[in-house]
Image 1: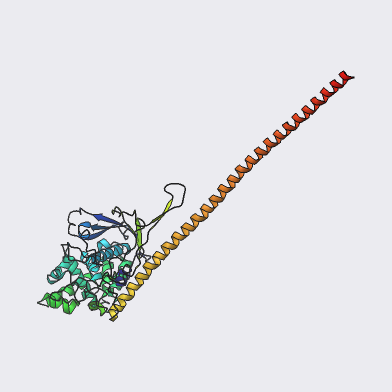
Image 2 (image 1 turned 135 degrees about the vertical axis):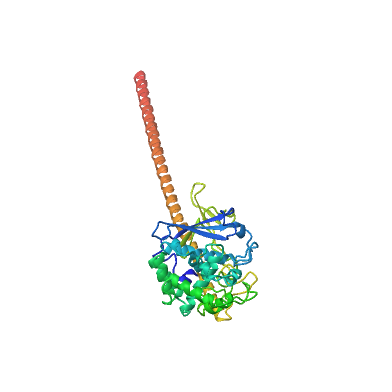
Length: 429
């Protein structure tokens, strides 16, 4: 999703870090109590991030609706999949852009919001928009202002669908300092603005020419705030790849992040890390489920812990995201539905192939173990034969010894008999 939006990913050569620690926090630090998740990064000046950490506020995730694939929490109206998309945008940018911390906060947060769109989630903040908020660092102001500003740049690029990719490409090459940001703004707007300040001045001037904020957003930023907007309604969220930005496919709050039709779409956490699109996630101290009866354990050695554990994800239609738990199949009724269905099918195939690879690797390990056990068995038989052969030699020695002693005794008895006969003959004669 982020790759489609901005053209950057953890698989790029410019990515300075490709692993991220994941922490599940029950007691958030000061100021983060109402945050669903957040990403922190660190690295030396003049470089991109060398360490990434995502923290997840479990007070929201503990209340997840187990039947909703979008991650609806009973403690918030937001879809948590969109929050993760927002935070992963920060992570990808930090890994690819040098000195991202020098960028204006509104540009950083606006980019993360533009990934999935916020026309439905931040209606109040958008209605209270002021140009001065582009320099703000307070609450939701830089989020909504930065989001509207990027829509404004996109509109001045002619809605060609590549404004954000051009912007990110320049930031990756030039960094997040003043020169890099100015060049990125010029690239995104196709030269309409030569710098961050020039673009802000134009944004302010256009804003002040309207008496109504909503009219400015609609006519200059392609953001239409529909009364009664809901995340399940038939409206586009305003994402960078949606219908408002470049006449792409319309996607509402449930559709903008694709998970398939069922919350059972997942990969079995068979280790302490998972690699997704080039990013290795380290699960940290997340409380692991009881796996006692969740898989198979094969004893492959002579010691208690010499075993192979095998567990597999569910690959039925529901778990592959092809069918909802209520039996509803993916739709291809419209062009947009068909495109989403293709993506879901691609992911389903990847999951099935992943399981096939897991089974193949397990089979190879079992075959290798079988060959080792066969070799060990043959070695035992050879040793046993050697031992038995040694015992046979001993028995033959004993047999020969006894045979010699018996023959010697018979010989001595015969000689004694002859002596007795000779004495009797002399006496008789």
